[in-house]
Image 1 (cartoon, rainbow, N blue to C red):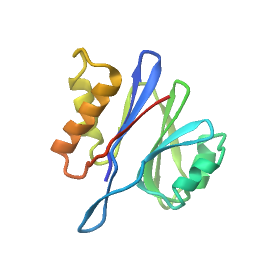
Image 2: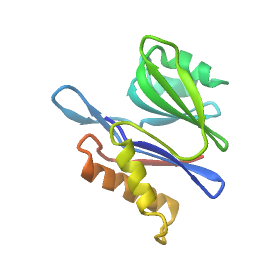
Image 3: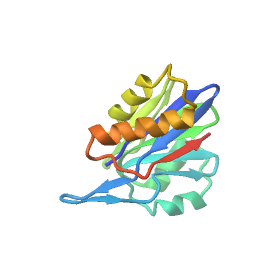
Image 4: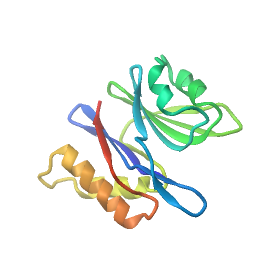
Length: 155
């Protein structure tokens, strides 16, 4: 399961993600759920119908190119490039649907917990990376499908 948040901070975007993966009866720690593919930062919640790490070897130009590389997955994806956050969703039976997000965006089972913790920490004198790591830890305390270690990446 997953908690991923892309948040706008001072003209930049910070992305935080957990490393939980679960099967029907076990919780595992997986590799990073955030990677760079060409100019895009790609964050995945769900099942990818591709070799996830191999995606980094490609240079997709558009969100549809990223969707083609991911295949007909059952997943949600955050794409970040420059100051733009795009949310993609696929149910496995139709092509990927993409939309631009004006504010912050969270995906995954723990996404709402992570987003809420991020918002609750606003106003405290924390740098953005510390705030994101604390929000990830808070989400993990409240949502059993969120698990560290945590990754924090700037775009």
